View: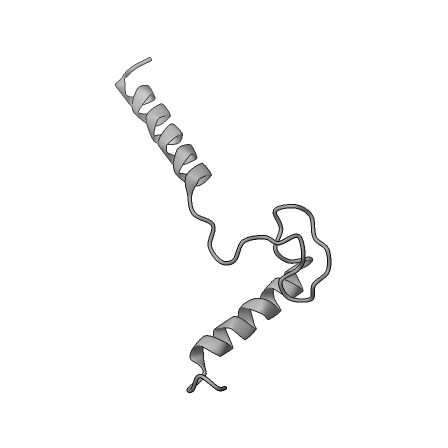
Length: 70
């Protein structure tokens, strides 16, 4: 094993650790779809892609609304 092989192994290990310990974006899973309320598998936040996309679109629209009451 030469210097380059060891460097590649160290890089892969560092990447794996970073991916395993990264902070999850968005809200934590609750056991229910964050959009429609259906029961979901442990660790999931939405029951299907369409629900996730709808939730993200509504969240984006809320952030871009011109006023707090909108």
